[in-house]
Each structure stands twice: as structure tokens, then as C-alpha cells.
Length: 485
Image 1 (cartoon, rainbow, N blue to C red):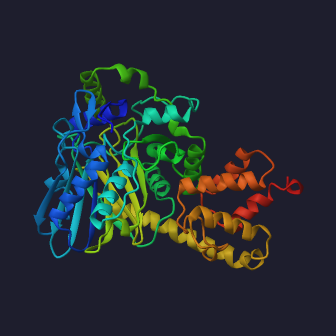
Image 2: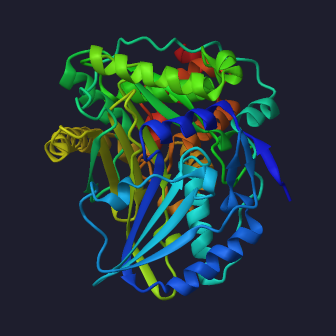
Image 3: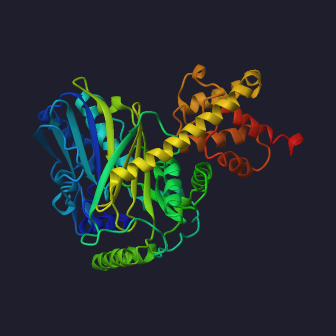
């Protein structure tokens, strides 16, 4: 069992952010029908802590120790507040006292769970692993989670991958909403639920932003390092960023294609421009630097980044349910960062796509959400219209194509779906595929069917923005036949 570990640069920066712009906390709300007994939740917390050291983290100086107090379970009579400005969502956590996570249970007409955990110790996937493991304990199931707590730096070393260049520096050049005058860290949050799963929601949101400001924007998108299969199912902070530039007038397909291209090139492994300095700088220097940058960004109304956009993936509602409690919605609230005061979190489940936004407190977040919703629904409507026209014309002749059953089999294995559910009309995304699975699928298809450079095939496939079905994939493969080159 690990006993302690030194902090990484990311963890130090996040801990400073918790001090200057609290709460730097990942928050998940699970709503449902039934009951969760506080006593049973406390028992589940204690049992999980025996298997998962991250449950008892405490910070001593710059070192994480794994013998801190158990996370608190707090029971409330009445429903969970619908206003995300309520103090319960704004309360900071304190790693130095071992208060790194907490669970709130609300017992009104329905039951809700609020799970709060410091972003310095886990990313979105890490938080999901802790939360779903708690529910496994409540159900009496075995858990599938790695008890380790390695850092992003250790993962990069394990990959033994050459540096992918150095990131662009952090100048005050990118547009965003102005910070609140009296409180630069003051923010408001809101959420909407799209009843159907939205394809490429981050790309569509980024396009909306660039068009609204009529300026080029730069978005930070965290990428889960677990995708490299060096470490799996570990509850830790194992995300590194990709920076994505968006110009006014770009289509979401172009933006999504650029994002997928960056993922294919492992751009998240690039070195940060200030990494060496940050590793050795004392905490008071990091804190002073962050104060200065926040102040200058507020004065100039220009930021190191325009926003943080995060897709925390597809959630199975059964993994956050028990025999006595049936979840029907999950909401994730974005961490607000004054250095890029537009934060978006997206989460998908059987009820659709849940999108939440945090912006400076003087902004009408609900009007903003209406703008984003209108833009995304218009894009979705256009997408369905075009798709229907193309498929009606081409579907009849495709079933007899020799590649069709072979690609069906590849998709079935990667998506873990029965082969009869794979047809030529439905896109990879609509079948439940995410960006990482898409890259795996294209890599396998390239190895099997493409004689030319894999990078050329990948580039052509990713130019679709990931909006790809078997029909369009066959078209791309056919274009690489010698007679078509």
C-alpha cells in the first residue's frame, strides 16, 4: 500500500487555484427515485477507503499522505438546491486538513447525491471512478479500480514517448467574458439537458463562441491519459490539455477534425512552456504569479485562454443506482477558472446530453445557455437533414458491398454492440462511439485496408469531424485504391 507521494506541478497549481479562486472542485449531482440511507453510504465510504488510498488523502507540505480522515457524508432534509449559487456548491475544500472530498445526501420528494472532490487529486474520469465505485460498494458488487495514485508525469515517462514539441506561451491575447469587477473569481453556473445525445458538442460550443465574439479563440480541452493504456481505471489527476484554436466562420466539422487530429498526434504530451520553471518555483512564487496573471487578465480583458471545454464521457445510469435508488440524471458542474472565464462540462447518459456552463457572475448564464442551445440544435437539425438525403440515395446499393460485413464486424467489436445493430446509416457517434474509440477504429481500418500512408488516410477520415458512418468510411477506403489514386 502506498503511503505518500510528492505533488506534481499540476497538483500544486490546482491547490493554489483552490486558495485564490475557490472552489476548485469537481461536483457531480445524481438525481433519482428511491432512497440512499446515510448509514449505508458511510459504510460504503469506509469499505472503499480500505481498497482505495485516494479516499484518505491529506496534504502535508508538498507531500500527499494516505492516512487522513474519511470523507464526510452529510445528510439534508429537503431537495437539493436548484440554484448553483447556493453556498453548498461554493464551499471550498481543504487538502491540508484532509477534507479532499465530501458526499451530500438530499432527501426530498426524490433523492439527490452531491459528490464534491478536489480537482487537484482527480480529473473527471478519476472522479467518476470514485463515485461509481462507491455505488458498487452500496450494491455489494466487486469493484474494478486500480488502487494506485501515480501522477501525469509518471504516465508520460511510462509512455517513453518523445516530446511532441512545446506549447505556445500564455500571452494575454484571447477574448472572453470580462471578469466581475469586485470579485474576479465570482461566477454563476447553469445547465441544460438535450433529450438526444449531441455529436461533437465541444466543437459546436467552440464555434458558437468564436462566432459570438467574431474573433479567433483558444480553448483548453483536457485529455484523459488513460487512453494510452499505460494505466487503467486509476482514480488520480491524469489529464493533460490540448489547446485548440477556432476562427470565426469555421464549421464544427473542421474544429472537430482538428481536435481529433491533435488526439491522433498525442498533442497532450507536449511540454508546457513554463514547466521547468514551475517545478522548482516556491509556492509563494506560484501564488504571486497567478494573482498577477488574474489581475492583468481582468484589466486587459484578454486571457491566456478563452475557455475550458470538457467532455466527461458517457455514463451508464445503472452504475450510480442501487436496488433502492434509481438514477435518472447526472449533472457535472464546471470548475470556474478566472484565467479563462468560460467553462463548459458535457456529460452523456441514456436521457441525452447534459451541458453545464460557468461564467463570471455578472453574466446572465441562462440567456447564454439559450444561445448555445439554439446554435447546437440548429446544427443538429442541419446534420439530420443532410444525412437523410444522402442515405436515401446510397443505402440500397451498399448492403452488397464486400467491405460492409467486414467493417460491421470491426465496429461491433470496438463498440461492444451486436452486429445486427450496425448498419450503414448510423454514425459511429450515434452508436455510442467517442473520440478515443473512433481513433482506435480508424487505426485498425488503416492497418487492414490502406496500403498508402496511414497519416494521409487518418487526415482524410478526420476531416469529416468524426461524423462518419460505414457508407462514408467505404468511400474513403475506396479512394485509396490504386486505380483511384
